[in-house]
Image 1 (tube, protein in one colour):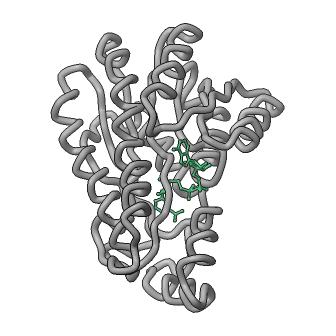
Image 2: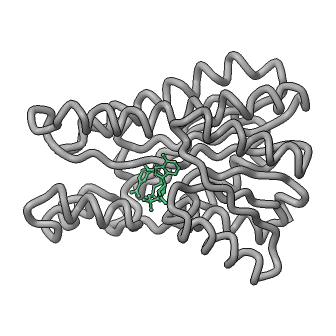
Image 3: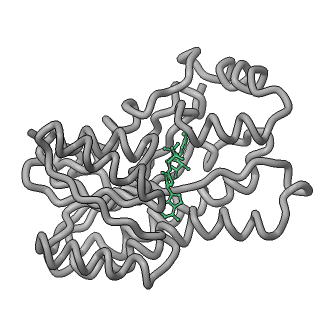
Length: 254
Ligand code: NAD
């Protein structure tokens, strides 16, 4: 098992990629701390892991709020003594050309997608620094690298996450901490279903257009990203530091 006895916090793991990763990490021997805003979904993920014989605890928290995240981190440390891996996965979409985006929507997406990486990292890092080891995985996106229609706001936040990853790596390398980023293409999750439904006049046409851009000819699945996250969480990736890892069906370089 590749994550035997590791204590791993995954934000936003009540759904989609985070959930799929939580299930895979537990199968690989990790104790998974499932975090989400949605109480029912978070508990569901943790329960699914436990009923399959794995180890999981659901701790609800809003990743943008220090007074919500700090008690969560304190509880994990009190209970398990350490956090080996932090997967900053929680994120939200924001669809529209810039002139259509309202300032409130801008602030919300920036807040969750960028501050939501900063806040958990801020409280987990001192424990990793003390332990002189750790792996942080930040969820970016291939839109950090390529232009896609109606994705400017979202792309700006994911570009920021990629920049953050590189600079974080420089600051924490001396503590034995690795910080890498995942850059998925379009992965079929509730997040994508929602933005296709609300952000485009013709969702079928939007899907067809996304597919034609991908060398794979099809969209990705949450398990595809979970397997890449497993690589970054495990010691198999010990020589990867501050790097982007693309899981995009060839859309970025195709
Ligand atoms: P999802 O909507 O299925 O899951 C995201 C989860 O994050 C939800 O359960 C939600 O409740 C939780 N969440 C949202 N705000 C939160 C907050 N403030 N605090 C705690 N939890 C919060 O989405 P997904 O597709 O699995 O996306 C996961 C991540 O992957 C996101 O960061 C997204 O931007 C990124 N991503 C997704 C795709 C894709 O095509 N699905 C592609 C590239 C990157």
